Amino acid sequence: MKSRLEKLTTEEKALALNLQPSIYGVFAEIGAGQEVANHFFKVGAASGTIAKTISAYDVIVSDSIYGGTKKYVSRSRVQSMLHVEYEQLVVNLAAKSSMMHFFVFANSIETTNFNNTNKGQGWLGVKFQLMPNSRPATCLIHIVFHTDDVNEQRRIVGDLGVNLIHSAYEYSENPELFVKGLSQNINSNNVEINFIEMDGEQFDKNTSLELSLHLVKSGLTKMIMLGADGKILSPTNALYKKDVLLNRGRFRPPTKVTEEMFFKAQQKLEKDGLAMRHNILPIAEITFRCFQEQTELTLNDFIKRSQMITQLGHPLIVTNFTYHYELIDFLQTMFKMNSLNIILGLDNLRKVMNHNKSGDIEQKMLHLLSAMTSGNTRILAFPELNNDKKLSGLEELKVNEEIRSFYEFLKKSKRLQEIENVDEEILSIRSDQVLTALAKNEPWEFMVSDSVIPILSNGHRSLIEGDGTSHFETNLNQQKSI
Image 1 (cartoon, rainbow, N blue to C red):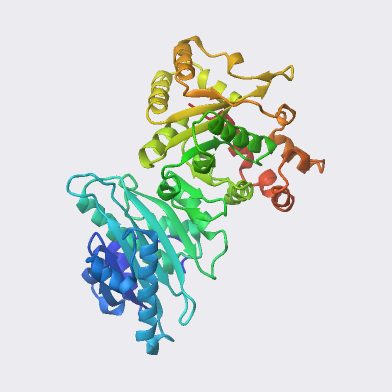
Image 2 (image 1 turned 90 degrees about the vertical axis):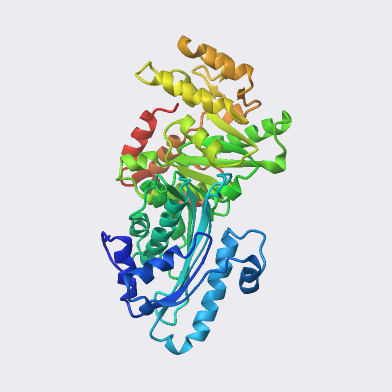
């Protein structure tokens, strides 16, 4: 294992692995050809690494080896390939097991078709031993191509596959270096890695989350997603045809107001006939954008927040979008949702609607207008208490005259609606109040859900004293939110 990143080309990585006499395995590739195995053949000394290569293109042949499946470009198919090939490898080469670190690399890739009617994407995985005779670990990634050039897609698959195997053996103990190694020689404008999972008894339970957060930080993806069980999800599958209810915030920590926002927004969607209860997917979103600007911020802060949100029973997405229109446009473009419903507190909405006039403000408003009027998208405004402790909603919201017509259009077209019947007794609760009370050993439990209390009791110092936290908070409060 290396403690720093080496700058190596794809060919240099393949050769370095070929020259490691103890690393030995199988390449099973479906879709874009044997792009990964080809790198190992071309650089020489491949006999030191390759026990077998296979490319079972015909579905009947593939099913006879790996079992039947509904989707051939899927996580489950790659997992089957890894399992079957690894079991055969360790049985066939049992005599070498005391000397070898066995591995299996597998992928199933869908390149763009001749008529450009599909979105190129695929799954890659590696099952590998870090010690001879040890239980193997598994790393899976999902990629989406942002180029329609099939030759470029194949080149990306080849580079990514080599990077994945190399990082597994050289950087698997360091999530940051693992992702940096994964991104080497890759143009992130042409491909996105929106899912990564590391599974093995050698790794901490938060390893997959740390790897995922580093994907966002490095720009390899704009979004990662966690399920309510805390496991990494593929957003392509999780958001498919759902009525997504999205709450953007710091959640540091989530309070009873957070729960009220989700609950009353969901009630509104059901009551107004905008969505069926079983199809509504409430999701919290934290922007990771400020991490890129303030590197002092620790990942532990994000991990604690993700634990609290998932403890409330909500999935979480972490993105690197500063502006609302960027997030809306990305979700609409990348995923097939039934509807997108964004919860915005009145204070946040006020910042959107009352920006000081600056160089590109008109352009940003046009971007937001375009995002809001394409697809089944709406903003659900959550009211607040005014200075007189009275409930204040859209009727009391004052907006700049320059954008009043835009604001009125959103209301009349039902793209902007108000959440009703909120619990006024809890609206004064703020996340900062919880942290202040924690720091002063004052009562705070009444401000948060019971399920969050144990996490805050045991790990609140990472939220109060985390490296760079104050920088992050200042930056987040100052950032533009259009």
